[in-house]
Image (cartoon, rainbow, N blue to C red; front, side, top):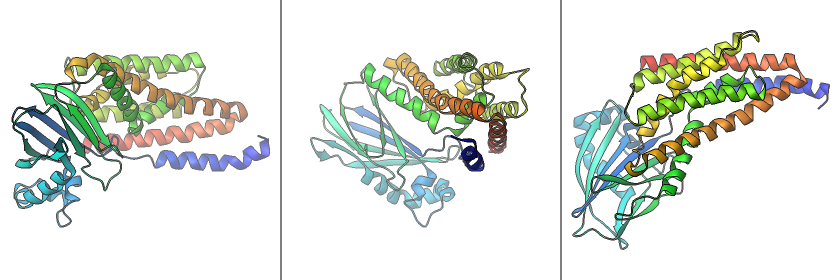
Length: 361
């Protein structure tokens, strides 16, 4: 690329980078989710469906989401809610849909969720049954986590998303180690890419550049630290509340952004930042992991696979950002410094916004 062409591309590149960072989603981990717990017994299946008031209110045009957390409104909409869920969650035995009976609807105002409890009856436990689920087809991003319990133990987990809307459970079959590793490896990668706060933290660590050895040390320090706290939280040794961890994660983004904006080559605090703040991010990863209800028979494999998925996601970010910055620095150091300053400022502002948003929530 000749100098004149590079000169013409400078304002375009700067504008695109600034716009991209400025328009990053302001609410981290906002992918819409719902949860279904199925408890298999000789008398049938007890199903609990937990979903946000926003998603459920979409089925009720005359009801605002906040209204749906009020007991009086819930009682008035009980049958409509039940009909909407029953039409999109079906349990079939030998091709025959089982009749669902609504037991109760419970408001969970602290999470802005509702829980609907159903019972599907049968006379004896079948060898298998099929679950068809697509709770909120209006939102293609929606993901539904399914947990199946039998004899008091979590036996299987599935995720309904996109075109995947059917699953078959062989009663008592459980889940193989390969299935667990594959599922949680994907969840780790997915968690990184739906979390702009984690993405910006890693980007902030890379902005000051450095040799391959230096960058590997920084990323390894972050990995080692968040692996420690992820394990501590998973095994319930230490588990700070999300109300403390989420603002702290946002504050860590402010620190790495400000460090990249103000930093000099004489003092590089990124190694220390990566380790210390990695401990905090590990608890953030654990909060997401605990919502998925780890299978008891494969907790270690689940943890290992999820952490591996997180590392794959982070590695993709490093491979995308580090070579680009290195190329810019070789071709035009002054322009590269401007790019780094603009990106660092965007990282800092985003972190500050999330911090105040989470503190005030």
